[in-house]
Length: 225
Image (cartoon, rainbow, N blue to C red):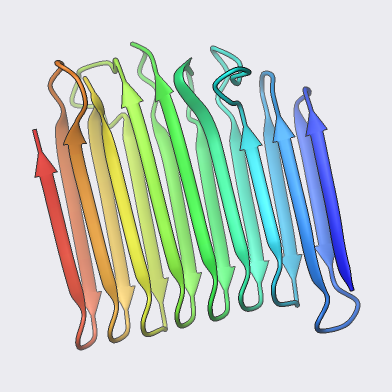
């Protein structure tokens, strides 16, 4: 049996909770928000093959210019997919836009995409946590026209624990911003890739770290000023 839930909202808070009554039931949950003070949470527990998606702002209909969105997805099970998309290149936010994905189980895929800009002291935070084997985590963060200070404008992290054959990819780019990224993997045959690069004329500050505990792991950091 397959469940599908979709919420489109322009107000402050949306919450979806879906838990299968029996194993083998896959669930779809989707939240779309366009407005100010947006807050969205999805929880899917006890099943496999679930799909969860949160979108806060698009190119044609961004989140509020001065309000920071918050989104979180929790999935407990295997072969699940979670996606969080926030903002666009032309939207600014004062505050702390946050996106987080927590997945427990094997064969999961988590994707976070954030794109913000502005000259304020905004800090964009993106986090993915996965516990299990054969998981894939992708974090993409863009920030344009930042404060050009030593305060971190963009902070991203991926943590993959207690598993083998996991893949973590972090991409951060922008102009006039300070970027910080951390990747932690615990297990064997894992791959981590971290890319930080400039996209514009303003200077950036980069800080990247990959820590791997185990054997047969591969790590790559590329920083382009």
